[in-house]
Length: 278
Image (cartoon, rainbow, N blue to C red; front, side, top):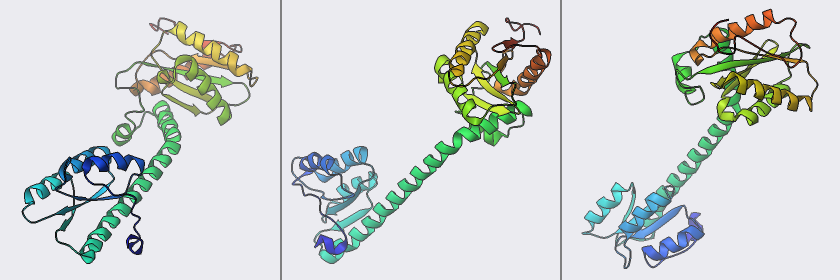
């Protein structure tokens, strides 16, 4: 009486081959299998399940003298066994242990799903804050560098810092998002791993590309952005450096803007195009 024990019997199979044909149609939480079966025995079935359905909890039914098979099942991570002959009481006891493992597995998966959902939602904001600190003071801990290693340009990889500002006191977050999306589509998002805002400017880390390529991308970005919002945007780009030099590159941007007080809408201010001297 499976229902009595809060279990639904979804199917039965004559041997391992029969089981492997049925399992994909209605993937169970628990498989109770004999060791000795024709065509495909329980050990081969367990091996296949451990590779293809890692969350299925397996209960092995074995007899005296089958220790060799049982030890092989243990190598596949099986932890639940029934020794023949067995009665309903013994089956229910092992079944309850298997159900606990199923519940623990589902709880772990749910927590993992929630964790990655939170991480996915918070990651962009965390990356922005980290990049902002690289730019403004360069003080980032080794632990933060380790945690965000995949999100940062590789050590020694050349980048430019691109900045944009307008004459009305900065950008709304949605404006920053739109600018970043347009620029990312033009350059390729892999070329623009980081962006943030400082004061009334928005900053982008651009993986090393030629000045002319970046200038063309900025021009196209501002043209597309002007279709949505009318802003008097002036851009500035640093020389090349690496992420460890972000503070130095940021200071270059501030200096460039200070020199370019008379710049016009759409201008891209920079050090020399060949990056040799200021």
